[in-house]
Every structure is written in C-alpha cells, then in structure tokens.
Image 1 (tube, rainbow, N blue to C red):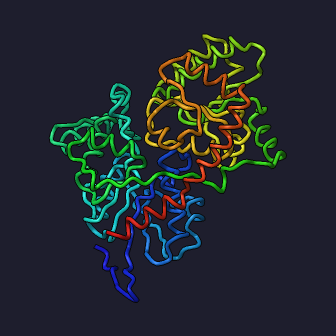
Image 2: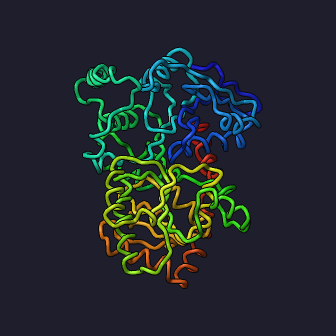
Image 3: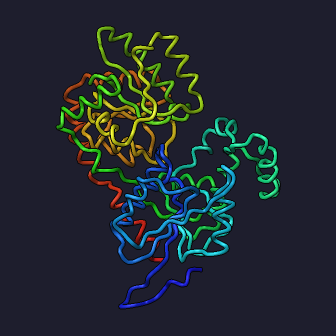
Amino acid sequence: MADSQLESANFIYMVIGIDASRANLKYKTGTEWYSFNLIKNFAELDQTNTYWLYLNRAPAPELIAAISSNTNFSFKVLYWPFQAFWTLGRLTLEMLWHSPDVLFVPAHTLPLFSPRKTVNTIHDIAFEYDKTLYRSLKVKTDKAALRPLIDWLVHFITLGHYRSGSVDYLDWSTSFALRHAKKIIAVSEITKQDLLQSYPEARAEKIRVIHNGFNDELYHPVDDEQKITEVLNKYDLDRQYLLYVGRLERKKNTAALVEAFALWKENNPDSNLKLLLVGNAGFGFDEINYIIEEFNLSKEVLMPGWVSAVDLPYIVAAAKAFISPSRYEGFGITLLESLACGVPTAVSNLPVFKEVAGDAVLYFDQNDKKSMVMAIDRVVNDEGLRQELKTKGLARAHQFSWRKCASETKDLLTSL
C-alpha cells in the first residue's frame, strides 16, 4: 500500500489510483468519455489528494491538458507486450508491487489483485440481455496465433467456467467486481436493479448510484450560425436531418431505425429530411447496409463515421430532431447532450431513458416499426410538441453534469 495517509490539520491525504487507459483512447464513446471527464473534473475539484493515473501507453495530449492545472496528478505508464488483458496482467502486477490507498476503475474489469479499498463502475450488463450477440464477439488480440492460448488461459483462470468470448469475459469480470470491490458505482438505478436481479453476489448496500453527466461547456443551444455552417459544410450537411449518435449495431437497434425512416419517407415523399447516423460500425452493420440498398436510401441515410468532440456539439445543436431506438442502455449520455442543446428528442421507452429524461422526450416502442414511424413524424412535424420538448429538455439537462458526477464520486473515494 502507498504510505500516504498522513493526517494534518484534520485532513487525511490519500493516494488515489485510477485506471485511465480508457480515458487515453483517441476515439471515445460512453465509457471512455466517462473516464476522461471524471479525471478532468477530479483535477479541478481536488487540490488535496494525490492521483496516480495508470496507462498502457504514453498519455495523449488531450489527457495531459485535462490535468495540467493540478500538480498532484501524475501518470504511471505500465507497458505490456500484448493488446489484450492489460488490466488483468500488467495492472495486477502494479497493484502487487506498489498499490495506492484507493483504486478507482471506471470500467468494470478489475485487476486480479487490488487494494482492499477499490471502487468499480459498472455501466450496464447489456450482455445479459443479448447473449447471442456477445457470444459472437471475441476478446481482442493483435496476434491471431495467440487466440487458442488466450482461450485456454481464460478457461484455466476461471476454473473451467468461461472461454474468451466477450459474453464470458464480461460476465466473469462483472461477477469478480461485485465480489471483490469495496464499492460499486452504478450509473443508473436501472443498472443497480439489473445487477441485483442478475447476480446473487450483488449486495444493495455495496452499490451506489451516481448518474453520469455531460459536457455542458460543449453541449448547449448554439447561436453561432457561422460556426454551425462551417461544421455542416465540412461534412456536406444541410440543417434538415434527423440525428442518431452511437455505434451502428444491432444492440442499438440502428437497422430498425433505418427501416422506420424508410417507411416515414414513403409517407412523406416531398420531404428533404435526411437520416444522419453518427458513429462507427458495430456488430450487425451489414443489416443497415442491406436496408439502405433495399429501400434505395443511399442519398437519404448519411453515415460520416466517427465525428470529433469539437464538431459533434454543432451537429447535435443543428439537428431537426434527435432519436435513439436502443434496445438496452445503462444510461444515455447522447440523450442528455441532445436535451442540453434544445433539440426535440424521441427515444425508445426503456426504463433507464425514463429515469434520465422524465417527460422531456417523446417515447416510442422500439420493437414496433409503426410506433417509431409515428414518433419520427411527431418530433419532426408537430411544432407545438417540438417547442414543449425543447423547453422541458433544457430544464431536465441542467439536473446533470460531469462536475456533479465527479464530486459525488470523489466523496465516495475519499470516504473509504
């Protein structure tokens, strides 16, 4: 353990270690932005404690800038020769050799050994709801020849219970975290209840709900028409688009959205509205392409891929409406971002979306194409509803922030 708990003037100074490997990735989605924004806000909020940020490669300029104002933060780059199992391998060794007072792991995979005071965030257990999808995915490795060895190692370490499929790895790592972490952070009440219902080892008193936030410095109503035009021109867009942000995959129900949009276009042939899908391709992307070809939508459905964090807020703010047809979510950061920009929003009627958005969005049945088509029509064409959603959305978004999330998380870490 770090010999760091020195009491002075009624303060206890701690060394808090953070697995910052996700925050250091160039292309960030939900978990990566969660990690990055908490670290950034910790640096602004806490001038008392020492923070060690564990990385598997040299820190990116963006991450360096995020902590530059706080000299109590430092990087510990732990090199590892393999793409896979850095947390279970190299970070485990570091915890054995030189562990902090408290370890915070923002994603749900813990090292095999960690301090007694370890806090782990579990974002969702989507793999429990679509095992067919996750069984088809494998834990990543940069050397195909290592696949049989990795499969054998996972099988050996877990005493024959698991292989190296993603569903096995995620299930095991979630169970391991629930058993070994001092505290678990669930990003929503729904995620907490999912854990309690799916894992006998989960204990309610051990799980703390701390909602995610969003970057309110970037996501807000935008009046700078020149900047909006500049960004839209960069991606060859006009302002008539229905926006989706997220991975283009089966879990997110993106193919169903494309089909619903095709049906809506059949009913509105004179509309110049486009469907803009922002995000990288995921499992089931071929289904999206098939529907685009079947309905001849190559000019109606736009897919620019991943969009930078600098440009995305302007694309969100300029959208005619925002839609999320997901089958399962642990929270919904992109939903908050659209509300914060004052964009009328329609989402699937998931309990977690109701927890986050309340009555500030239009809900539809994600398993019913007609329901989705009707939602598209209302959120695009019903001006009274659009104004109501805009007003309610702005008020709702103000209840969440990364500063609030980081403050509650810091208080939990320092209370152990």
